Length: 273
Length: 273
Image (cartoon, rainbow over the protein chains, first blue to last red):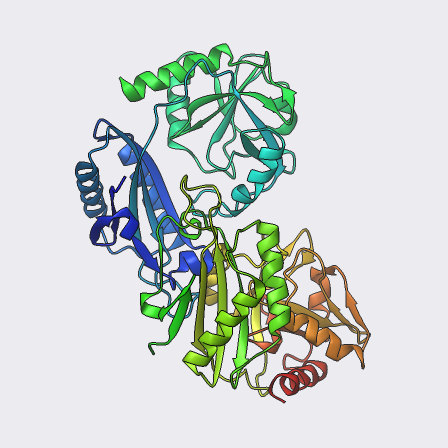
């Protein structure tokens, strides 16, 4: 239980890892992060996650006091010390201890690692989504802003659903922590490309799919998801996860479709070998 | 310098006031707050701020472990201990130490107090705003989400301006930390009423103005601000602050207008006696 975490240059038990209340994450919700899985001591797609992390840093103009190499060394050391069989590592960079409660200061680095369960079984019949009209601010940045997502958890629960799908002006974007794909009636794989956070799993799945099926990254209309043969979502935690219902309406046959199952299998092979 | 702060049931030097990194403010930007001024030991408009605080708590479904009376006693005790001549007190309630990094837990209470300067002088010729198309999420809740505002600081600076004014679909809403008022060519005072956080200073200014001028709370079009005789913003920190330029265009005579100056004076009288 008492695994270690890192705050700036200190490694310490997670229960002792803290930030002063003047940090801009607490004061103004300002921070970015990235999250990757570790399997048998090996970080998955680490370079892609670090690329995205430093892209978020640059867009938010945060001021880290470490290089990419230094961050990598910290990550490797934490993973070694915790020695978990399978885990998720979260690297957060906040706006720092602001003197005026508004302007960015020297960024604070927080690294935490949690043991994770095995990926979702392929026997899964698919999850249920509800839709909500909302556009995330700074969508291309992996910010810590999940305010709407957390607020919507009650609606998700009340609807007997598992997650929410955002759309805006008739166009689908993403789930709060996952990307969405559909299989069209003419067997194309379509996934949104604008106003979203581009997931690492999303790009791996696109690469896997391309050999056997036409893939389109383009705006996806809300009505297209309801007439899709298959819908699935992708994320670092969820891998490839079929969707059976959206807003109570059945998608395709209401069970994990053929292409969804194929990609889920291929992705698991890629990750677990 | 080393004034005290409160974290849940502990009063301690602010430099030692901290939250564990598993708090949902740090993980997911989830928290609400309120902020009021203290003048000669007396909190200003405390009941109105507490009303709004508990309204934010209710909408976000946070789970505080204190009553209104208990919170008030904490505030009064902190103000007494710090003994500042003039200050601003911030009461923050976060999503708490979530076990899954996503679901709300027992909320964490953070109270900080900072000495403040005297209010802006009436000699002020007015500040400069730039506009930006953006709608705050959950606008009626005083959340800690200022991600866009902090990100826009660079644009504000590059434009030689002081603050930003949000609008969406041709309708003006608010500044990140202030409400906006205009004086129309036919001498009405107009301020937005929808999709905004209703400021305590805003409502006090409306009450002061109503005796002498017609006040309309309604949607305000972007083009109306550019043809206004006067524009000013209101906030707990800024009181009534005239605006001289928006997006580089001069408003009215480009100096603090007659009605703005009158309301600034009246508001200062109300606050300082």
